[in-house]
Image (cartoon, rainbow, N blue to C red; front, top):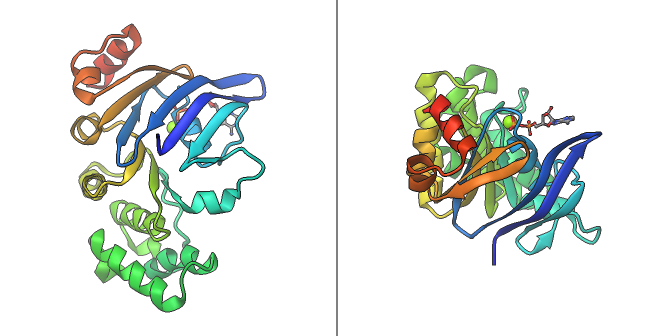
Length: 242
Ligand code: ADP
Ligand code: MG
């Protein structure tokens, strides 16, 4: 049974149908990279997987909880789903440490001592223990994004969603963020990653999904999707980006 199950997912904004019927599953511990041209619906798809968007049709089930069922406690379900965005969205007026401590304390998952210990452990894990007392404005883009990842991990999620986590970074900072994500993948985190980093996808993904025009057009192991793409649209996209 899939950790994430998406069945017949459709999403429209007014008359604009952005997701036109998506079926897929992500197994526990699987790393799925989502690639595709701008406007193909990748972000919308990811946002439906923690119900940042209400869906128009179909079902999204994470850990056996149907996110769009009125009986589901969506806030509780979301605690289990970490999300990292292109723009880090850190709280500017909080220190790095407090950024990470905030959600677990606010949601009553940890007391201050536990939250601080967790935050320090996570900062060490992303290589930023010395920045605990810094403010976001004092960090580089790569450091901010590593804090954002630590912050998402503080809730101890079972699933992590990443939407182009390195797209806003200067090139020299991409590697440090991808490195943290590689560690997470190695440790068995279930991850869905929208990315333009084809080298990363090739190396880390168990499966690559190519989206175009609101559909999954092609999917498979990276060596197949990158090495022997079958669909015309995949071929033409990869010709442009590789
Ligand atoms: P991608 O991430 O692949 O670039 P998006 O999911 O961001 O694609 O966008 C797909 C389409 O959905 C675009 O046409 C975009 O304009 C539209 N869209 C996305 N979010 C909204 C929104 N909140 N309101 C209206 N249209 C939206
Ligand atoms: Mg996007």
